[in-house]
Length: 350
Image 1 (cartoon, one colour):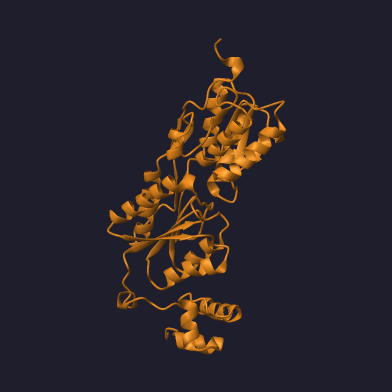
Image 2: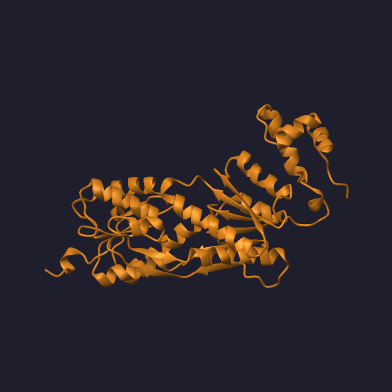
């Protein structure tokens, strides 16, 4: 079958070949209506120009794409850069290069097209995605169009798509944290959950609830809040929750992750609540901010290196045609209590 060309796209869209070139290469001097018409034809025809004779001859680029969805904030910078370096290292150990890109979001078509273009031009052989939500259409579209994707923090039960691989966090972290706090004597525990469109946030939320139910602990609406997974929205969620229940405070707060727990630290400080004297605080992930927080943060440790090596190796195994490659993996973690958690007042020695 004849491969479609830019001339064909221009004819179908009713524009010049140079206009097609400007749209494909991201120039801004194209009217929005024209841009949308050309891009619709491009998508319908699955067209993008190939980069070189290597791709034209059917050979791969020996390159993985690494896509961070969203803009890492300051509190995430060290954690995200560590993730980047691990992915690059894992790929290098299999003799693959890594092409990294930060994509603000995938809900805007221009950013989704940016990702499609990298795949369709043959710049990469497969993509690693960090930060995509669990209902992201592009994570369905790309493998359905024959591209291999590896997704951090994404899960489909009995997923029929063999080109979509994933890796996820320990699903029991919340339950283990509740077990630990219960053993310390806590009976009034608040939960600050994250963005439930992300698999890890959903898993942790459900795991916290399992732990609470197992120990017959009260699930009070005033002690349940949603704070995203970064510090600022977590601070707002924690402050609103604590301000509303100052006469009946929880003795511990379980946050969705370490960045969210830092938001709890800020809210407690502004409300005159001491950690852990008044409220114990637990995070998860053991990012760099956990050990340097004041007081050092209790958290749940995930082996980030093991997590991303699992994902990268399975993506490359799939690229190289190996059989029976596991489609997903949940990486187990361990509890790491630090100074931010202690028995509630009534259980402390005088």
